[in-house]
Image (cartoon, rainbow, N blue to C red; front, side, top):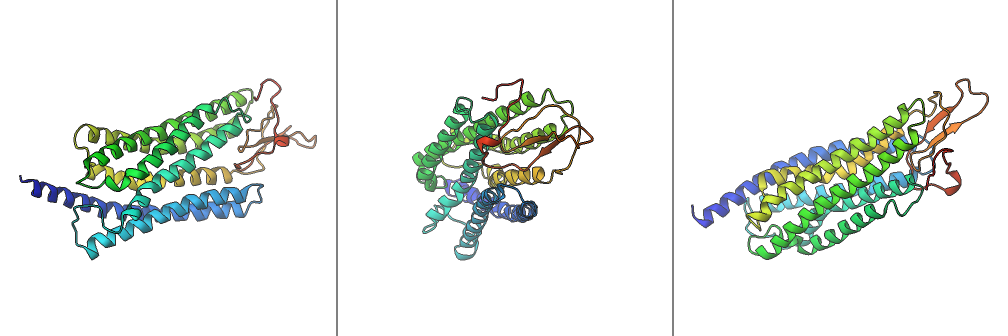
Length: 328
């Protein structure tokens, strides 16, 4: 098979995959939109202390995803309507748009990881020593993202193999750094919650909070792990052409999951009833996942464990320490 026919076959396969993955992205955008507005409604109907910050964060993630969908549709129109089904180089005049679209999933990942690091910092009672490793990994993420933005216009080019090789290496490293940051912060948060709740007789609420955090982080980290693994064969074989059949289809999920998983986590915790009562003798407050016990003598069940919605900030005067534990 001649080089021209091989290139034409590759471009055809790439465009077919791009077209179908765009349809998948539009479907996920509709799902994300319903989840987003439902979560906003939940927090607007409940007067919580930090709902504005929560809604602002979710809105920023949602806006980044909608921008990605809009840019992808523009590229789709340019390829199939303006210039036919094939192209051999990066679209002339669309370099910046292509770069912005390619960087959107990573921007969402940076923001989602920043929230996880902040939660970990507050859960561990603002201990810088505990979050030193997650913060270091997060800074490496940002550095790798900046480097990727510089070489992103060459990732799809069939002419600049050197830049594409560097881009593939950086994107692979960035995917694994994202997994490492998410896994580290999730493990630290889970360990803190388990250690604080082990003396409580009824741990249903604690277990639910733990499940929500782990489930959201697991889906998020797994997708980026798959992205990193798919990039490994490319590094050892074709330095400038990424696998079109699998990588293109995983991209819509990588783009939507950072924002969607965060929004779902906030919605699930926000729907927790505030009047659940069951016996316990330990008082705990874990940062934005607040566990507050009301020891009023009028309580028939002895005490109330109230889990409020997650917040992005906690005043130092509201923190309580476990009698048996050092929260530092």
